[in-house]
Image (tube, rainbow, N blue to C red; front, side, top):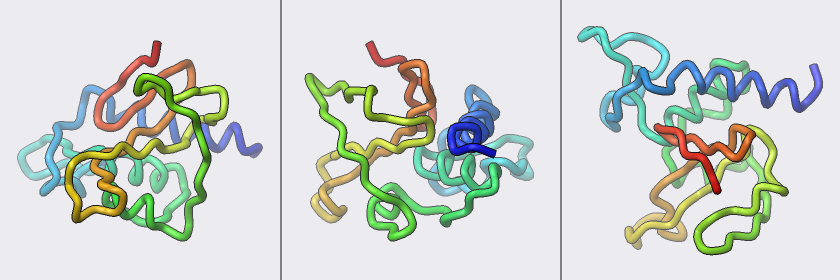
Length: 130
């Protein structure tokens, strides 16, 4: 399978979560398995990590800062203008780290999204870039 096909598999796994999973950091391990209450749960980082795991690419179920610090992942430099990333350098499955206000996190990283193609990013929800 070619790299682009592998990346598509990850995005297809993520699509299963879209609109189904409820946001919950404590119950984030119920991303692809039902919680006893019958619901599925995830947060931004667990939804992406579990999509990769379900696609056969397990680098761990990391928190947002953990994805940035992982030696199993690599950095892609992308220009950002007015808060919008230049998607011409992104490939499906690439993650975007967003800074927040928590100084205890590396580079204040507080949120992660994954590029899913067609100007769409996902991180416990779906957002179309303009």
